[in-house]
Image 1 (cartoon, rainbow, N blue to C red):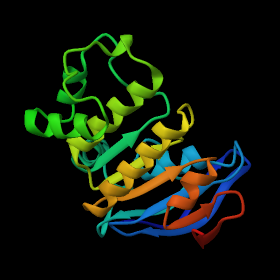
Image 2 (spheres, rainbow, N blue to C red):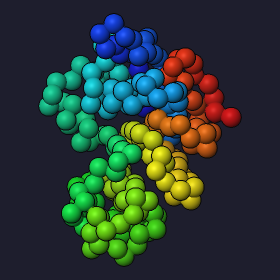
Image 3 (tube, rainbow, N blue to C red):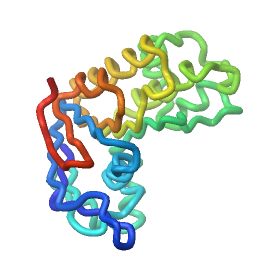
Image 4 (spheres, rainbow, N blue to C red):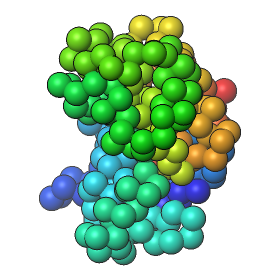
Length: 210
């Protein structure tokens, strides 16, 4: 579970959002929506301890992770956090297997993850030869290999066709059922409607998904 308590982020005199209180239980998916520039990615980055909030606290399973030092933040990200970036964040000159090795070296788990994303048997192929949709599937497989307790996804379907986008959302839902809390920043209505709750960052309104 991830929870925020009166979380605020400001840049100089501009406040992106303030006093945000959110709870994402294990097994559930939260969509972050709002216009470009409203602070969706910044909120994701704060949840992942990649940026520091101006005030407030973030709790992960009861631990106030905003109070961790540099080493503690690195250990938290390594042990608990899975991040699905829009730009994939892969080692492009490496093979699929080498990219999955970053998350774990369990070959059986590699095989299951690649089968789940439709890339079974392609471990030795170089990433730079693959399409954008295939690269996002590799990033998703890497996430499955890591098996994090918190998944943060930044516009994970933004560059994908409808079928690949649906596969990403379905896999994130499966990971939630298996014990993750999932937070997705998105402009996509279908992704939003696939989540359990929706937080509009610009209005700071939390609602149940339709």
